[in-house]
Image 1 (cartoon, one colour):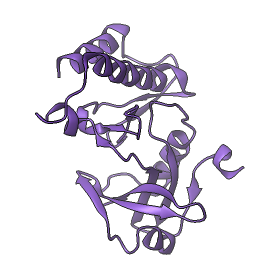
Image 2: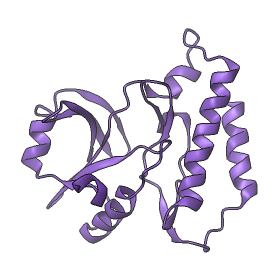
Image 3: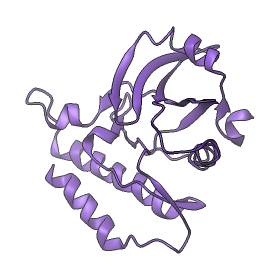
Length: 191
């Protein structure tokens, strides 16, 4: 029932336990470090992004964005499982993507996809972006689509991730055109 209503709120002590005291670092970006964790019961793996204290976002804005992104449920968008907000400690808990980011596959000489698989991945990314632009209560403009921010699940299904630069707009107020969306898809094919 909790998952249907939105993301779970975790205490910072929960986050340290889930990550085994931040033992398994998956990567880092401009907003902080990402760690692998495990939720019990069920041994469900998650990726926890610990946001650094330099974030411009105040507490109310953070909770508002979590509530909006937490309602997104689409096969091509990474699902927000939960969050932590205690004083300056903020974390986002996402579903874990075991294959990592798309850039590891398209910029590697030893890991090649067939054209059919590349087409499937590009269409999945386009579906995810389209859902963010047109399928949500609030339009979500990502502003940072790149292979590093496309994650792959066990079956290489692409999922749009990293909403650090995203902006929320009421429906019908977007300045993003169909032409811009087609341009994004063309860029994906040229990468």
